[in-house]
Image (cartoon, rainbow, N blue to C red):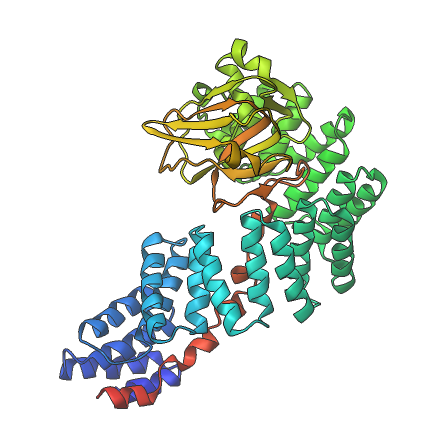
Length: 510
């Protein structure tokens, strides 16, 4: 066993395995031999074998203190190699939590638990572990930035900015953190602050194409087309024929926005899009091409792209008859309230109203009227969230009644009062669901309010303010890796895993 350990330290893994096999032959149930064997396989990146031998060591009652940490690491790395396999992630989590019972402030375990919960989109638990990390080391700028990222995922942009700012004070030259803060400012429509952060990025990294993309989008949103084109032209100079798909998406999306209603330019964009041989792997590029086909009245080609995007999936039975509605429902799990018009046009048309801050441009407005919403079966998991704007409560007898199957929940005057006058917000519908909501219905009485959509996701029952995000690509923050991936050499540093097992552990266990 000691020889096996020494050869492991010398990175001579083949020789280490030879001695460990001999140790196991001499004593079949010797836990330390299995443990070292698992350690060797871990450093060989053979995580499946590492898990097998480490579990054998556990089965034979090993006394190594950090066994569960190493077993957690092995399961986590195996999960990553299998596209974040749920089984390995849960096993990693189980082992880290066992290790944390003995060492509650173990930084490595806390970091990896936070990452696993974030991967599972369990943001509440992810933030709990990040809070523990900050209590251990409040100067870790990567953890502060990661905290901000997760707050952005649950649309708490003001809170997110406070964490990005703390990270910026510690590490003012971290371009990644500045970019994340700029995006959060964009969501809050604080465009001058967006541009300020982007200028800082460009000073630190003059070739940062993402900064120019965001700069162009921000100027476009401000209707400053001249500066938007300047930033776009700079982005075009930086990109080349070897662009990544994400970079192509940015470029073509900007070019489309800057040339809307210019049919000659749109035709040129189509020509360039059609020259991309692998365009089918990018739903965003297909989306852009489909929209241009529609605007150019080339409907047969638009339909072809539509079918490629959704594999011919028919969702007209839930009232979705247009491409944009299908895209939102399938890709973003958003069901536009205006889709209900296709169910009962005679009844719902009296509530329909234009609103530029809505996703489709159309909302339902229960102005001085009772409104009954009867939804089709919407098959999606996660909490059901709706986007509303409560203009005025007409009477203290007001209510909003939610019915789903045998479940019923009613919001009365004091419940609704906290929403009045806040403008567009997102908040959870108080109905629990698993894989689908069968026949959700909502009855609104004595309240003047607008409704844009319902969606499925994570809101943790927080009220979230909504800004106009028409020009930023949907879920832009998801196009780029988060802190753990962007800084994986630091976040998942194997260097910090080297001292989890020492010669003393062997001697103590024999």
